[in-house]
Image (cartoon, rainbow, N blue to C red; front, side, top):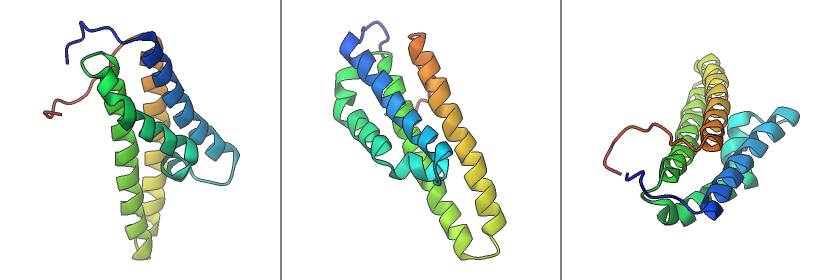
Length: 134
């Protein structure tokens, strides 16, 4: 990623909006009856946020915002993966305590990822990501 490229102000605002949509999903889960991770992957705000990530990621390619888009996308997909694992654990009956633990840990992780990403965005800093050739 060439961080020398500067993103447009519109893309910075869009990235704030995407974090806001994810944060709204988390807060609505805390105030409602859903779990954080289910609200994060299955609520309309988060689904819209991920669609916006994929739709606009070409516009941020080569800028420091690219790392935020990848951070947001990875957070969504990893959360979905853990939900599937927790579901399989619940089906086995014996795995219910492990599934509940996974839900708690992943929920805290989602809150951390949304907060840390939005905080670094506000400071106009890229997100540290592993280099995997994407």
